Image (cartoon, rainbow, N blue to C red):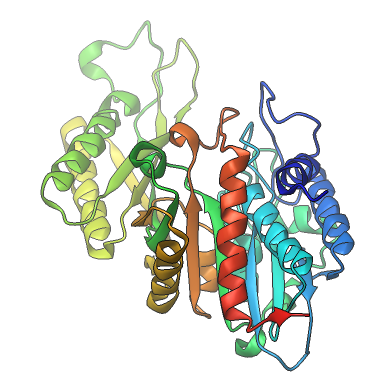
Length: 418
């Protein structure tokens, strides 16, 4: 007897390389790690069992293709299997499970599609290891920066190049994973929301309007390190004292913006690095990492300028030097309007509650959308928890995701029952 819920559970467990989803320390599968490779191997096995054509491209993305005609258009779906450190087992994974589940449903219903359907398991979506996200989809879309990437290291001083080569990727040729315009007709990513709007408002589906890509700043304050016991209070150049007000300023200025802005803005001082970080030494250097997001690009860039002005004021007040580096600044990505309308009509036809919303988190689809008509669909995250071991969405939400994607694909591929 067919049991979709049991298949979803078993597939979820296999892709997470576990027998239990409730793990105290969650899941850690960093980009280009052995754990990510093992998860990709499970994807290949599951896709092969569904009768799909499988291969790994030059950057390490896994492809699973239901090919009906090499000359027919292809609808792409996909997400990722890597995680943050001690993350959840649904971020990315749920989208892969549901995409494969939709193909399984089409085959079970004897649908004979007139278009090809591809599922891509993107490599290294998370920025948790290198501070650079969506490496696999960036490569497919042709938005890589090899010269910059080659210099980037993880906390163990391993470069992206070294990590790729240890994984089995040829650094000199990985850019050949780039896809031509005719590779896809469209692309869809389904993901857990990673926020609380759907769960709080009891909505079944979120149809994403735009993804608010971040501006990321690294603010470095240079004071003078000195002995805590012998340096008089009025003779210090304490970098931490000087720059620490910026943490509250970022919070307060963001709240002010949201009182009058049409689109929300979020801003976070998310990393702090104090040097030399010794109990009896005055902090000489402090680095703050600031993440600023909004779908309104002018809003977030004006906010970044405002923060820069505050940095200069603090530097003058405390007689220190402040350096500001822009680590990331990309235009926000707006989803394809036609695909949004199709999913809205589909939800209404299926009797599902939905809302049009923005995504504060980045996803692989934002790179695909630069080249092909693309859509992003959310299912609820319970209590909005993500990037944490308590991340959870019940199997009924995965079933619902399969139902939505199956219906969408049936409408798009022009299939008929054999």
